[in-house]
Image (cartoon, rainbow, N blue to C red; front, side, top):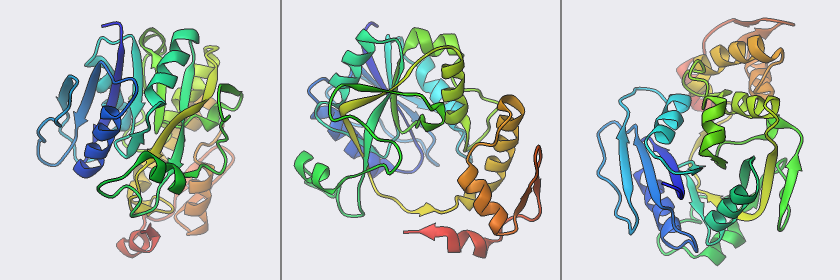
Length: 278
């Protein structure tokens, strides 16, 4: 296939997937294929769409992001890959802007993600309403139009990004040694940068991130984050996810040394509950 495939992974967020599909349906450029990696507790039915949908079942108790994204990429033969988190609603020109950039540039490209409040993507949402409500990321700044080269590979964000299949394959996809949640996307950004692949932020390619409860810091992924931070440090000589690791240290959960990360104690259920931000 020479076209564009949208790839997403789902774990118990069917309503969010419905909004993602509706965003694709309203797009000026619809995908040639939607690949859904189904990690739900029970297998889900394919979403209804006017474009082909390919379902990939991945049985898991956790959130193996590197494995899931690689499975999604392996399930399509499309020349251009657009990874969208299931929480994202692509707006009207998002796909066309991302695809046209990939046609011109062999790069790792990121869409402009805007963050929505709890009721902003309710039934009957409009693009104008999402744009009015969505807040830009405080650190990742995007041009109004065109592209901006980002020199810091640590600012690569896997919520909404695209790449040519040939380049994705040449990089070997996501490193599946990063198990579960955390640092697998930062490692991917660093490997792309080391291979000379530019990181581009694309103006006008907007995806709106649907609200959901989060944990700050994400204590529900504590073990994964610690293990993946150690692996990242061994590869790149620096700590990733520094904000989260510092928060863990401030809570007395870890001790961070020059070259080691030691678990002092695991978070308790009460610790996790207090970290939940609705």
